[in-house]
Amino acid sequence: MKISVIGCGYLGAVHAATLASMGHTVVGIDVDPGKVERLAGGDAPFFEPGLDELLRDGRATGRLTFSTDFAAAAGARIHFLCVGTPQSKTSDGADLSYLVSATESLLPHLSRGAAVVGKSTVPVGTVDMLGGILAGRPDVLLGWNPEFLRQGTAVKDTLVPDRLVYGAPGGRDAAFEPDGTPRGVTAVLDAVYEPLLCAGIPRLVCNSATAELIKSASNAYLATKVSFINAMSELCDASGADVRELSEAMGLDPRIGNRYLHAGLGFGGGCLPKDIRSLKTQAAMLGVESAKDWMGLVDSVNAGQRLRTVELARELCEGHLAGRTVTVLGAAFKPDTDDIRDSPALDVALRLAAAGAHVTVTDPKAINNAWMRYPQLRFEPSSARALEGAELVLLLTEWNEYRSLSPAAAGQLVRRRTLLDARNVLDAAAWEAVGWTVRGLGTNAGAPLVGPVEAKYAH
Ligand SMILES: NC(=O)c1ccc[n+]([C@@H]2O[C@H](COP(=O)([O-])OP(=O)(O)OC[C@H]3O[C@@H](n4cnc5c(N)ncnc54)[C@H](O)[C@@H]3O)[C@@H](O)[C@H]2O)c1
Ligand SMILES: O=c1ccn([C@@H]2O[C@H](COP(=O)(O)OP(=O)(O)O[C@H]3O[C@H](CO)[C@@H](O)[C@H](O)[C@H]3O)[C@@H](O)[C@H]2O)c(=O)[nH]1
Image (cartoon, rainbow, N blue to C red; front, side, top):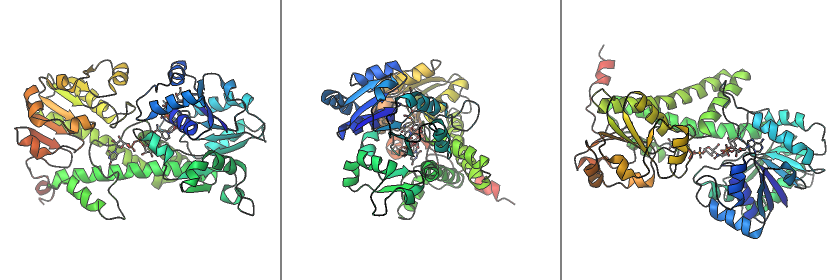
């Protein structure tokens, strides 16, 4: 099947390359000529494990091409909208201007009966709004097929997803003939995903509003779990408990599960933060105060972890960050990606620098992106050189390279063996054994149990 993918960023490039690997003929369209040139050359414009290989394969078979020209999308049976829906510059809501523009650019090139299906994460009601743009083309099928991939494991997540969700006009009842044969956009999507469906991946068909909300609610739930355990980590610090043990024990209850229950610096990236704010805005507009307040709390607990980290760093520098030499391990919002969108690590690094510390940031993949965005920070690609002379080391993104640092070797490089493990991943005892002072978030490692509890319950 000929398919077009509009918007070739972290989502679209992976979607296009995996569809080509399933045997489809795919053209990726993007307004960024530099990105298109690299993709067309079989070279991913960002770091995503496994993507380069898929791009090269797609290029070799001739099934995967890229263009800046929307005319190249003509003749496709289905067009996937994968453009960004970032947080608006003026509110907490999503900026839908890229989607509107992409749909308008696509309109003149739509074949009779073609399907337009969005994958971007959108507020509920977006499909109806885009339907207005396509109103003059009643032959065109419109649907939504939200994406759940994670960066760092995007290729595997796309080829072996937990589920496929189709938002189709009229919902489940209208999506099938009386004999159960899929019709309309459901039939087209089934043909696209045939190999996945044959492999037993569950597929859920619902109306567009439900599909839009399934995506937002899923991200909101993941963010809720992270903020919940981080709120518990603060309780642990206040009481002398250890959040790693608490989380492990809670996670063994299958009703709770241990995933997204890792306490630390909290969530960042191009998805969870903007998606919970967008959901908060949607809830407010729909007059649903409980969901609005819930998202606000999840967001503020998450922001609090960044501030707690800076305060802990200050404490570890005897109350004064000004003039201190500080090394930050990690710039990406999480390991295995070069994405620095809303990176908790860089947020903390900027706050430390603003407090007067001499901050050096290192990262295995994200240095270039970080340096272009924050030229005021100092970056060093080599972690060994970044550690030289440090008075405080902060582990802010848990790349394997940092998890496997030798405490003794790192100790030879720094001026003072003081470590803040804000991702709670290191073996504090092994580091303390060679003279490091180690602190975490909610692990109480090395912290004196000064009596916040006694103070709170004194009267
Ligand atoms: N990144 C993820 O892991 C992920 C996963 C699931 C869903 N999503 C959602 O997918 C969407 C895209 O996210 P992303 O991370 O890929 O963003 P991104 O910024 O990496 O990519 C968006 C791409 O769209 C292009 N673009 C913008 N306007 C365009 C237009 N009018 N025509 C053609 N191309 C245009 C941009 O140049 C860019 O390459 C968002 O809604 C996001 O929430 C992302
Ligand atoms: O126990 C945990 C798990 C994650 N995180 C942090 O949470 C953030 C998000 O992590 P992850 O979900 O792995 O990254 P994303 O690639 O942003 O993926 C999320 O956002 C995508 C875009 O919507 C969705 O498709 C995915 O399903 C959803 O997991 C990162 O900063 C992590 O460090 C924690 O702090 N503790």
